[in-house]
Length: 250
Image 1 (cartoon, rainbow, N blue to C red):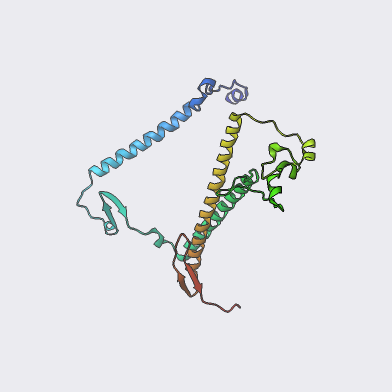
Image 2: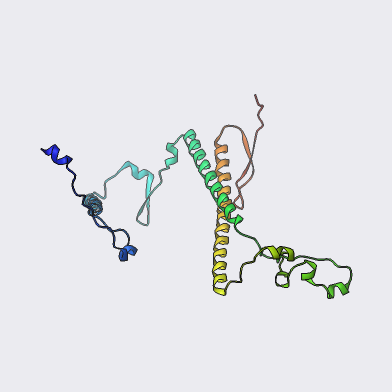
């Protein structure tokens, strides 16, 4: 009968979710979540109590051989054990190769995203200089009577532009967007500045990763076999320069 009772379809009891007006407070904690959190809290409390008891009964005059390789600074324990010595040269070389591949991947991601951001932007106002369009004439009279709109065959409203200066025949077939209000223009300016900041941050991060990659690659090559001589020390964030002895290729 028990197997038959399990076959019968029963009503599925579901716990209610977070109310719509309380969504800002996050997900509604279910009972299983509370049980998991409570067990984790009690486990940590038991561990802290065990450590407190162990510290209370510990003999301060007791000696451990590990004390020879450790010290305390301002009452804080500091380990002087070099974990890198446990790894062989080949293992360190493999780890640095993996780190080099990771840095190469992160740099490629930043450069690819920076390129996408750059495609959606027009660098109109370059830092430190204004865009200019120089027109040469033959005499001073032509300079005084020079008409920019007439010379470029466009309307006076966009004649002072140094970019995207459309001609009259093009304006007849192209519909320009209407002039937007100050609020919309301010919002667009804020969004553009945010994109420029993100682009600048990604380019700087890619440059930093490139320097780290060069330094790590140099460390990996220095650990390899072969006679080498340092020519130049590291300076200004650039890695040191080495020269290897030429070897005859087989």
